[in-house]
Image (cartoon, rainbow, N blue to C red):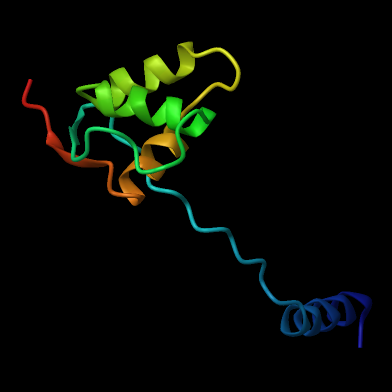
Length: 101
């Protein structure tokens, strides 16, 4: 057996032993043109918290893009897409179809 054959043999055995690394699932991005439909008058979480304040901002916006802009303009702590997803998860808003433009 030559050195090259030995290396090929070793590398093929290593491939059998080493499991491929699983990539984490990619999160679906929010579309800035999606419309936000507010389902409640006030957020269904404890009043006075930062999360409550961010949810009020999200509920008052018309589109996802405008909500993201408003959340980024907040002072500590800055909000983002997670806050929109959370508001949708707890039933405060619904993300509707894209705006025609």
